[in-house]
Amino acid sequence: MNSKNTILITGATGSTGSALVRSLAAKGVTVRALVRKPPAAGRFPDGVETVVADFDDRRSLASALTGVGSAYLVTSSSEQAQEQQVRFADLAAESGVEQLVVLSQLGAEPDSPVRFLRYHAAVEQHIREIGIDYTFLRPNLFFQGFLAFAGLIAQQNTFFAPIGTAAVSAIDVRDIAEVAAAVLTQDGHHRATYTLTGPAAITHQQIAEALGVALGRTITFADAPPEQFGAALEGILPPWQIGGTLEDYAHYSRGEAALVSAAVHDVTGAQPRDFAQFARDHADSFRTG
Image (tube, rainbow, N blue to C red; front, side, top):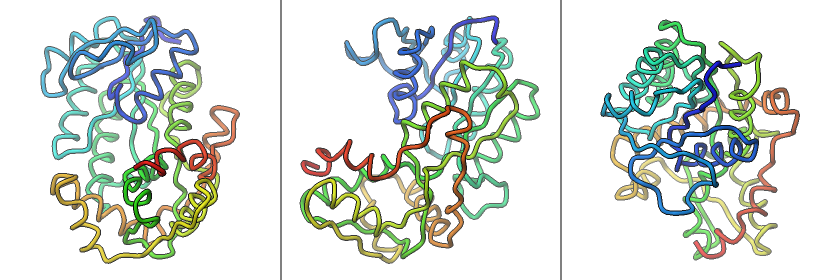
């Protein structure tokens, strides 16, 4: 185990980071949450230390890393993500961090047609080369990503995406957090790469059916041309992110994200949640948008 007890969680208000902070705090671990601005009272569990830092500010990152034994690395998806993650990894190594757990993505390859997968691959390779101990977590599409459709589903009982009948082994963010918590608090995960998926590969039609069961009404899914999907994202996501999301969906539609892995169970001892469980747990969000 690490000689330093503090675990730094970046992206602490994001989907995986916030779930990870809660999981570690429940285990009684010393947690430091990195945020971009001071959090509101009650944002984190009691006992969680917060530190304000910016991925583009080396000095603030170095300060946040002081006394840290392990760190969880995730950044917002942007054109700067690769540069920011490389900078953080270098500073972590310089600061004596002994373990870096990195949120990557299933299919991360340097020659991928998906920009997100290329930058994740580049970050992974850099971290391998700087000598710090690492664990790479490569999850598939998040169940929580479907909350972006909540307003449309609440109002019109339908949603759409350019994926056809292709199946994707999507995963609940809570399971990613449980894997990360185990990796950060147990031995035996150094220099490992874990592909993280849900228990099955599912189609968007099956997702619509599961939502319908949870909500008690019929929910439909419609395949849509990429151009229509991209236009619907305008004003919600920046252009670079829209382009990457369309590349992601093309990747899904080619059947390249249907692999099912046992890693969640292997690392945590628990089976990953299925989409039906997610739909039940978040039903109110799809009722109100």
